[in-house]
Image (cartoon, rainbow, N blue to C red; front, top):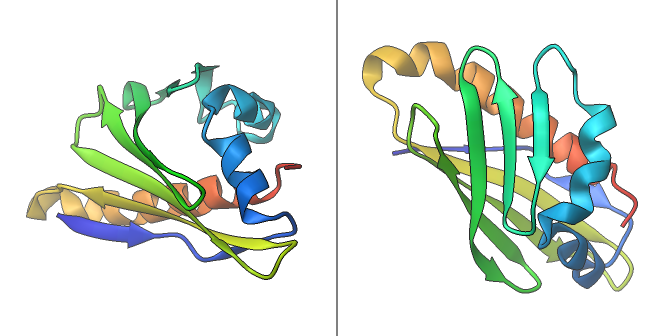
Length: 136
């Protein structure tokens, strides 16, 4: 498995507040308007899942598999052509701020790795960027 990480994002809200918002995926429905409609369609949320249609991959669902309050939320991809696990790490940065990073592990065979590596890194960076802009 290969591991990919976004850059660390500074968030001007305390760790507990960020975690409380992200641990229920219904709370992040507000990000819909910040995603490019040509790349992401039919985005839906529930407490434990977020589903999206990503051309050319089709429908992909991420499901919460573990919550480690207030520092980590772990996900697995369901319906993805590749086995992918992802997690959001949140660490305190003083009393009123925190830092966040999005990490993914994917099982990618050698032939596909060259084609998928850059888009996967870009996707993680975009996810982290959008999550860092939420008003927690």
